[in-house]
Image 1 (cartoon, rainbow, N blue to C red):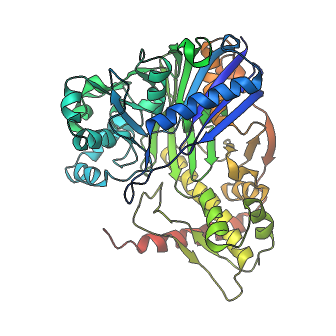
Image 2: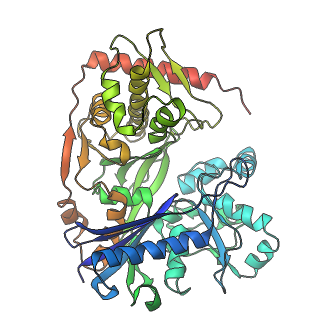
Image 3: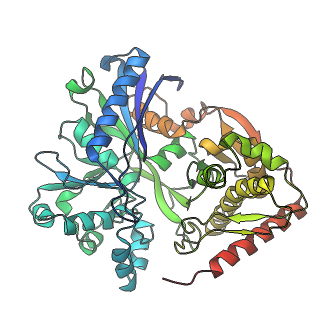
Length: 500
């Protein structure tokens, strides 16, 4: 049994990948599922859609690889984080659609908690800020708005879980209600220092303890799938939230190593080792992974708009037909112009966390055209990454540019122009790996580690393969001038905040 099945359950699709013992990919299957937007700022998924699409892609991937259940050593799960499901312990029936991480309906609950002065204590315990992004207030909303749900929860009849937990429960036929430390650390209910659900937080957010799953290592024997699903039982041996799975897939096991994933948005994680670092710049302190009972921590920065800025060029402005055109177009831009795009289309993420401001263009001239807009759009992703990197270096002085390499993954990394500009502005090397499917690989590794398919982290890191390293080639004077211009543009956008 030298194959591992990775489930990568994302926000818009479910995917399954079969990895061989040498981490090469044997098969891939993917299926999109519907998104529901019942009100402004609300985003929901039907839990059954998540479940049925997951089972279908697993079966498809096994068939494409020509494998049976007996050939699979273990299943690993990685998932969209913070998305919240509440279901009946006896029947498995969800009491409400899953509330997705993007959903903003609990803004009023969050505002009340902040006004009452709870944020410092919550941040100290969880490493998070109070925001609708996280799961805790979503659970409270479901209990308060579904008729009879709170009473049923108090009687121990309902269970809560993030998507990994819900899939595990269903895969095991309702036998196992568990999650891993990385997913637990995104709920606002989990103390990342003690590694346990926190009594005060549970009471504050009014979530009965009986609803909460057992929290395990990221690589652990969670249970096994029922025989009817895939033609025989398969051990489930690894779980991690998607961004944490990516830092594992990128083999960032040493303190100071950093990965950044460029999709719709961008998520950067810096490994800080066994020490949780409290940020002074609104970065999140999170659990990167937990192995053998030992927690490894990371600083995390979230950028709301990365690849979606390129989609805006394509769909909103119509100046490109496909994303691949952006780099060559940016190359044709007028070097005498300094155009800056601050893509705050949905507010600004870390290190600013201001949901009210909106995007702006600076430095336009009569000669500004499609090439300059493409240049500014790609550069905006690099500037935002620089802001995260600068905040991380200030929060954790051990992370200095001299010895840190950024490992990148996600769709935007296909752009050589963007990756070179990223290296130039960071003044640090940027490494693009051979295997871009780092999230699924991380889940596979965690499962395969427990099943003895893959070696210990240090040896697994030896399998990481570089496709290309981008080295900084920009003069210090040019870098300083460009970063100063970006800082002025951001200041201008932040100054436009007129309050609620």
